[in-house]
Image (cartoon, rainbow, N blue to C red; front, side):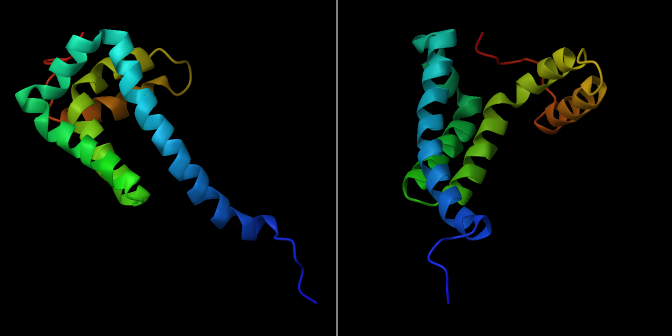
Length: 129
């Protein structure tokens, strides 16, 4: 006789997409608001509308739109590309701070420095702050 209750393995495929969809909406709003609160609204607008950053801004906005249209995986990947273009200059700075973490610091530093070089290698050339 079949059971009416779902096992853990059966319930995860139903729970994860629902949580993912609602969480991504909240994350989008909090990310942009947090950035505006940290560096100020005029600098945020200036950062996202700079000519070299327009490609990343378009990708980030397109990813948000795709998520809102219920294409979360593709939207997330497009948005991740936009964030990489927008904040790629900052990876070298994060790598220098991450190098001070006791055990995994040197590995994080190497990975973040490689990511910085892959994004153009400009070291903090156009950071908003």
